[in-house]
Amino acid sequence: MKVLVVGANGQIGRHFVKLLSEDPRHTAIAMIRSEEQISFFNSLNVESVIVSLEESVQEIAAAMAGCDAVVFTAGSGGSTGADKTLLIDLDGAAKTIEAAQQTGTDRFLMVSAIHADRREQWGDEIAPYYVAKHHADNILRASGLAYTIIRPGALTNDPGTGKIQAGENLERGPIPREDVAKVLHHALASEQLHGKTFEIITGKDEIADALNRL
Amino acid sequence: MKVLVVGANGQIGRHFVKLLSEDPRHTAIAMIRSEEQISFFNSLNVESVIVSLEESVQEIAAAMAGCDAVVFTAGSGGSTGADKTLLIDLDGAAKTIEAAQQTGTDRFLMVSAIHADRREQWGDEIAPYYVAKHHADNILRASGLAYTIIRPGALTNDPGTGKIQAGENLERGPIPREDVAKVLHHALASEQLHGKTFEIITGKDEIADALNRL
Image 1 (cartoon, rainbow over the protein chains, first blue to last red):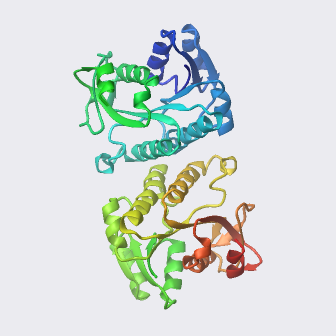
Image 2 (cartoon, each protein chain N blue to C red; image 1 turned 60 degrees about the vertical axis):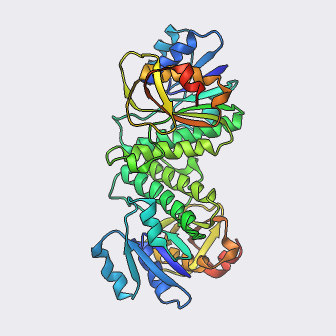
Image 3 (cartoon, each protein chain N blue to C red; image 1 turned 180 degrees about the horizontal axis):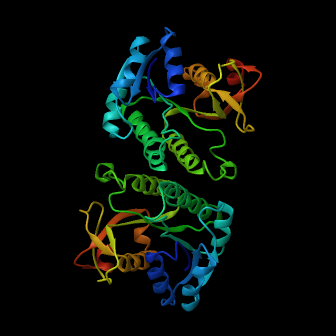
């Protein structure tokens, strides 16, 4: 598959693009925001396209041309305000979904967040972020695309273990970003995961086994 | 009709509740955030219910019990940040829509904003607000409720003129909040406006005539 990775320069994005670049079945296109981010992808021999999620649906669609799948792992991050949460995490996702519909890019993987459908778990400080993720996921589920929504627990920079727990309703727990990237890689070509939403944290099962049981 | 007015203490909300209180066909319930807001509604002989849009769907649904219609004219306003835009303008609307679905309160009027479906018109500063309104409106349109989405131009505190222009795609222009309230009042019982989204600015037509032509 030819896969547009939206948010390729994020921490999960970089792990994921590296995995794709080592897999002869797939070709990654890294969608990034600026020229300065390009060298990492050049070093992997991965093509980059510079488009910001604040640009139009048309520009995102142009970046997607010829792709078979989109992986959305972009996020405005903790260092910007809730205005960027609205523009990137919600509307950037919505525009990417519209671009996928317009270009017929049917396969769509979304990196979401554990408990994104459970308002009573959102707490106060992070609640605005959850609002954006919850509604972006709902837009994807209503899109008609062959989606998979992956909701990791608390992200860490620990080395991946390759072992996870996966399910529809998990207790909060940590998971290395590297393992989230591995789950994306496994899920990409899995037709069994079309139309599914699930949570992942570090656990005892091999990724392939945990995903097969969903 | 018994009408729950969400955001009753807002500037449009107060005008609208006053109009309802003078119309023997309708009974208003003012949904407000705090005890201090209650005296205005007491003076109109209008019942109040104290529920914040940051509370749960269940609490909003309880406020809605026995109502035939909901008018959503709440907004976090310009003095709070984009975190409240997410929590109130987007998720507060989404929770109110869910409460209406759960309670079978079929009629739903939404006060939106002119150009909320046209990203190219959003500019920079107000774009995060537009993201919230755009997606709240989309949630309502997909809800199965008998909705009407009313999108006023630039709101002013001038006295109402009772004359508007209404249409699906207007140029930006001003409109007094008092006239927006009058449009809500006219639209409330209009079956012809079910499932419609339209923009309003000050114009030359009587409100009833302008709405009848939509």
